[in-house]
Amino acid sequence: MSDYEGNLPWLYAGRTLRSFSTAFLTVVFPLYLADRGASATTVGLVLTLGSVISAAMMAAVGVLGDRIGRRPMLIGLGLAGAVGALALAGIGNLAVVVLASGLGGIGRGGGAGSGGAWGPFFPAEQPLLAGSVSAEHRTRAFARLGFAGVIAASAGSLVAIVPSAMHGSHFSMVDAYRVIFLVGAVVSVGVAAVSWPLREPRRRQRTTVVSPMPARAGGAVPPDTTAGRPDGLSVPSEPASNLSTRQLVGRLGFTNAVNGLGFGFLGPLLTYWFHVRYGVGSAELGVLYAIVNLASALPYLGAARLTRRFGSVHTVVVTRAFSVVVLALMAVVPTFLVASILLALRTGLNSLGIPARQSYTMGVAEERRRGTVAALGSLPSMVTSSISPVVGGALMGAFLDTPIVGATLFMGVNTVAYYLAFRNTRPPEERTAPGPPAGEEQAAPDVTGGAPRASPGAAPG
View (tube, one colour):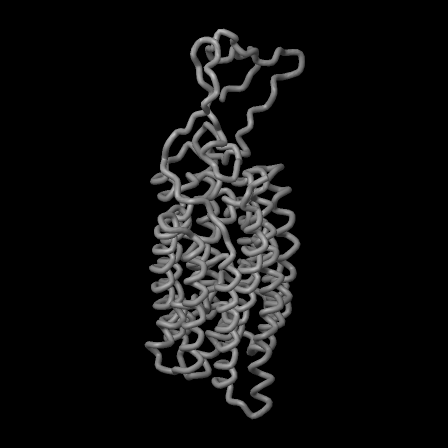
């Protein structure tokens, strides 16, 4: 058991609060801009510029978190979100809106069903979670984190009903949205507060520590696989993966760049697409997103079982492929009800692969570089997702279904690219060599101090 499992309740609490606010801010922010008279192109431009700011913050969090600690990053981001939401509530200048939305990550929550797994927080949150549990329990911990997030997001989505209710009580819609931003500021302060009790190991040098045990016959000194971990968990003698950090970041960067193009079409513009195509407002969309998040909660709990049976990469690829097919169907259905059902189905399928993908990345990354890998591997996604909204918003005037078609195309390409990039790379918990076939001898240790003698049926290491 890890000495840092006490972090889990606080990490779950932070994700819960963040997902709660992200859910309603993602719904209301594009509608707030529309009610202020912004065109589809302007909405896309604001989201794009805000994404650029969030991307810069994410890179800084990943690199600095590996150097000075991930806990200070989470506290600082919570406070930054509060400042951004307060600025949106009090100032209507468009330049301030862009800066504030980027600072607070407002309007880019990862979409329905993501549970807040997006933006500058995760390069600090994910390494802390991975370092708080054993490798065998890592995917389960990520699944529970996502489950907590989507349940909270379901509740948060209902807050999007409030502006319509306030409008019926003689508030302007813009003023009602500003009240929602104030709620977001309070929740962000809560995120900083629950990050305060987190603990993390001191920064370690990249050294090999050996046990002072007496040498065996032959002079061999066995390595102490627990001396390098303050939590007492065994450190595998094998590398985290067959990929160097640079190779891992490069492959993640390419696949995430393609996925970011797709998400940029879908995530921030989806509520606007529903609004324009079916004439629905924040109340209907708030209920829809609440239902969609609830529908995606249970699949999170099944992710660990799927990963144990089929492996991380296959789980990610198959669930993503089915979700892309369902997403494509949304462009051809005639009613809001059918489109909503398809969105819920698509989100549930996608949710099965999210914990597997997050846990896999942390598993194949070197522990001391996990924050950097999470940030730099996902930075291309943030950059490309900042391009798609302005392009999609501009094209929607000529072709309304641009967000759905664009997301389907690029997410489909991402599915193929992810499989090709990682099909031959497994995390440590999936590399356990099988035992010898029945009837064959186990490998016998060489009592003279040399390497064990492999039996004829033993699998190579």
